[in-house]
Amino acid sequence: MAVADSEAAARRLALRTWPNSALGGELAQILPLPAHFEQVTDHVTEDMVAEAILCEQDPAVHVERLTEYADAGFARVTVQQVGVDQARFLEMYERSVLPELAGSAAPAARA
Image (cartoon, rainbow, N blue to C red; front, side, top):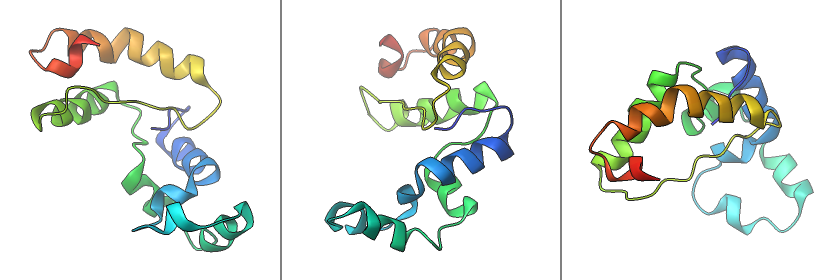
């Protein structure tokens, strides 16, 4: 996920820091050098990255997405902030996301 000042800023952040999230198939696993990743991500767009990385800033959307994983049977889900502003991410999850999940019956909420 990308947590930032706005969805637009999150999309820019995700594209800048994690463009390889838009690479399909095994491509993201087989490239030997960082230069090769730069070459194949030259044509990646914000829209492409936003399909793979949650850029919504509404905590309810994060709760919804995590609930979907729980409903699909996942017992654990790892959540990663793609930017350096870890404090913003942790604060949002502490205040608005985890309390909502803790109140649900979803197994993932018991982290």
